[in-house]
Length: 209
Image 1: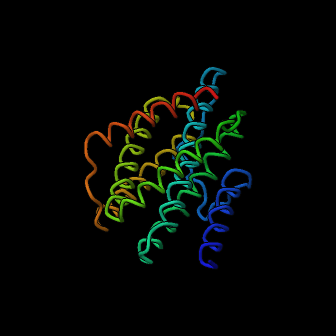
Image 2: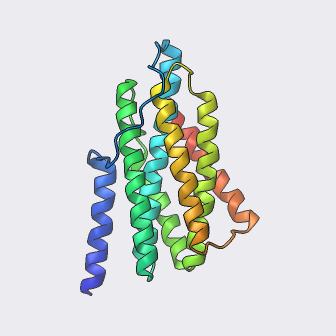
């Protein structure tokens, strides 16, 4: 009973910190190779919307890793998930700071995004560690592709956002590789398609609200 209570309190604390506390990065935000240029109002709005989408992605990453770490019985995997979650906290802090710099706001639906991702993480974890790791690998692969698309869409003058997104892309690729090395199962094509569909809904809505 005590173990269950401790786990519940840990999960609740993680959710509250993710959704309502200011995230603190352990790494400094990536610095652009060239100084940021002047953005037009439309460029600033688009950059802000794209970084809001990326911020939502990091909200979901926190939920996924917290859920999967909570249900695994493998201490080594739990540690791996916790380390990845800390790097995702860096991403959360970087994207939140950049959103503020661009004069916009996070998605008002963040609690909904968190709850949905947490539920998926619990489901994946309950299916066993290989499937859970497979879910991590596929999620990070799709996120990497999504971030590559954002690098194509972000204004060239917004070198600050581009530097953040590029580092996030590198980190996500590494997380996917680590999951595969740890024994991830390949997810079936219908599962991958459903993940892409859910991500499309999230990114489309978060771009606006």
